[in-house]
Length: 310
Image 1 (tube, rainbow, N blue to C red):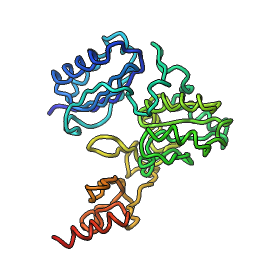
Image 2 (tube, one colour):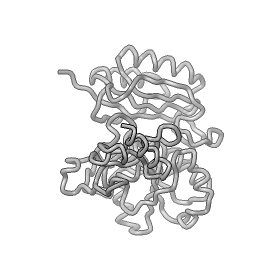
Image 3 (spheres, rainbow, N blue to C red):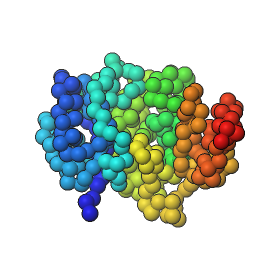
């Protein structure tokens, strides 16, 4: 039986011909039977692909042969090509859509003016040394934090990365500007950009976690400063560290929007026309059409109508 894996990776580097990189990456993945999502821009590459273990190893070897990607770090995760509907390789203005392509500056070393990188053990050391002065700042969509986040983290009210600039400029977080702030996200890429945007807006002492939550969780499991599960953008929807939810140190954060029962399962609201918002709904509530909605009154009415029509 063959072994399959998922690769997560990114590299910030100036690319003079993103389209050529896109075509090469698409052909490479197709030849190896990999599926997933890759974005390429003039600032670099951002990808998540899955497939046979040997194919993943060949992909890494071939990709790192390109000079701009020779130092790229790859994170391994459980999964396979089946966790993705297809292979998608595209050229975009940004490899993470903050809506600030002109503000982002990169060179051969990566993002210019970003936060100081901390290894997982350095994160814990900073908290030990500076105590409650240290602020964890979530660089993901607020929904992702519903099932997992760092202890006492500040979770901005954002639905997409496009919302971050307005959020930072709103004044809500000015109290943090002279404090040590550790920005964090799934694999580290969003914080490469977010930390630079924060420093550009007067946040004085900004850090980011090398490899993001993934690397931190691999190092400390459920015994560190991370609590709960990690939202992931494939068919799995979430993953756990250590021994998972059976781990005695695991902290359950997610709860059903209807009954409050513990759950890490996100479902799409049944109101396909105007909503499709992802919300936490337990298996019991999901079995009933009347509770296959996000909780908004108009969506509740749609669910009730569909249930009555059955």
